[in-house]
Image 1 (cartoon, rainbow, N blue to C red):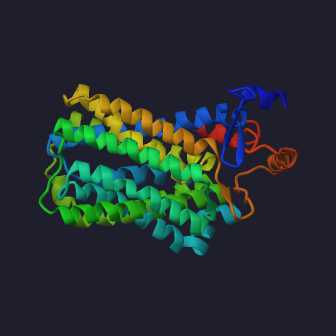
Image 2: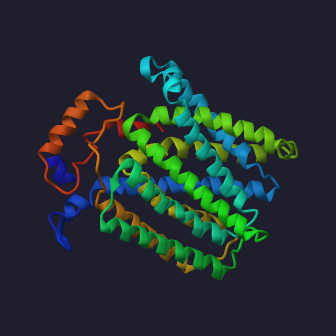
Image 3: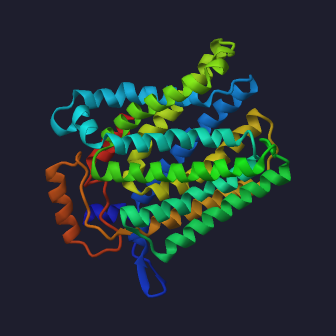
Length: 378
């Protein structure tokens, strides 16, 4: 009880919303702050990939599949190797024998989601991409509702609308600043590619949430590395060999590829940790600020025009993200444990949950030490 009191930020104040009465001390906890901070770390990593891509584009390098291949190859070297050293039903051979087609579909969705959104820049504008890319959030919520049996409260729908308003402010600032980057050679095709990418990302993210919450993070990343490397390698050989041969390799190009690959590898390694703490939908809401971080970097690196709407957009998106995570979603299915959970920890969780009647579950910092260990390992 003392530990729980220490983690509260708002004492015993209460707020009433319709028929519900919430204790703010149970909502605004250190766990919520850590969730917000970890979500913004993911956004910064995406910003790093965006900045490195912009520099590569400035020197005439257009090889999205090569860049994706490097990320999947790193995942293969680390996490797939770990699966190869495991024994029993956690070994890679056992996993491939029983679930190879599921992970093949997941890897295909992830690879093609990355590829189609990059291709969209050749046909439509940055504004269209920023707006239509938000389609991933409602698709995620629908898929989570049907396949993960996630149930949302009204506050979650309000939070999503708040975040989308923040994106609207960001796009408005882009239009006022004249940042109509991209092309408009075939807007219909480009917009279709963005929507396809959003659906594929949603499929990949739902698969990720199911895997890390019910199986293990290592299994997800190992299989993503294995099939991602295979699929992107084939696609690279078919589509991008001429473009790779035209690259004028020097230390500057090598460094940009290295920065991109390391940012993507860290993003893929770290994202399952945050998904396990929250949900795929919450993570994608936090990633809406990635474009803003890229814009802030662009002001200094690429001389973009600053607008106060960028700050307003950041604040609005953050408020929506906090609102979404302040009140938990719930599942229509019984809770299942990850294969990485310790039996003693499961017993401790059950004891703590059975003795608590609060809206939010007890702080997971003291109940799930493997989460902190995973973060530290990154």
